[in-house]
Image 1: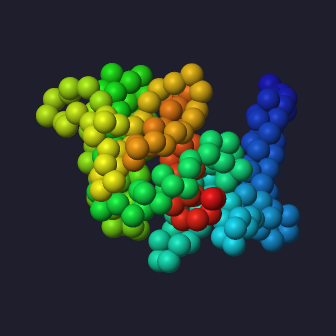
Image 2: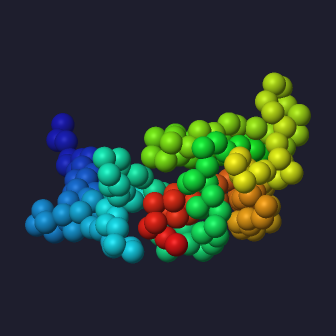
Image 3: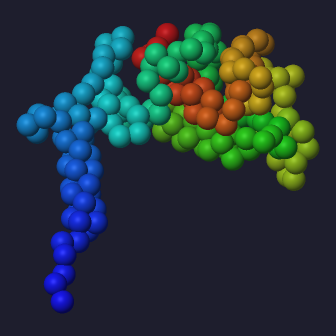
Length: 195
C-alpha cells in the first residue's frame, strides 16, 4: 500500500517553527542587537529604567527595583509629594484596608511589597491593619494618623485615585489590577523617578 505525504504533520511542524522563531526574534531583536523586549530602556528624571519581560527595572544603590507599569501609565494617578515625603521620613506606618474587600489578595500583595521595600530601602517599619475588626489585627483608620505615624488606607472605589490629608494617604482602586498601578506610582515617587 502506498502512503501519501502527511501534510497535516508537515504543516504543524512548519507553524511550530514559525512561532518559536518569531518569539526568539522578538526577545533578541534583529541580528541579536537586543532591540527586542529586553535591551531597551527609557530615561525619566535622570533615572534609567530597563524594559524587561513583565515591566521595568531600575537600579537604586545596590537594589534593583521592579515595576509593572511604565512611569507614564503609573502617573495617571497623582500622589502628593507631601504624602511621599511623610512616608519616607516616618519610622513606622500603618497600612490598612477593609477585611471584606473583594480585592483582599491584591491589597495584601501590594502591602507586602511596599512593606519590604520601605523597610529595606528607607528603614520604615510597617504594620498591616484593618479598618474594621478582623481577628487579632489592629483597627486603624485615618483618625489614627499622626505626624509620627502616618496611615495608608487601601480602598476599593469606582475610580483609581489618591488623596492625602492629615497624615493619611488613601489609595483607591477601581479594580484589582489598579493596586499594582498605585504601588508603582508610590514607589516611583519614593525614589524620585516621578515627582
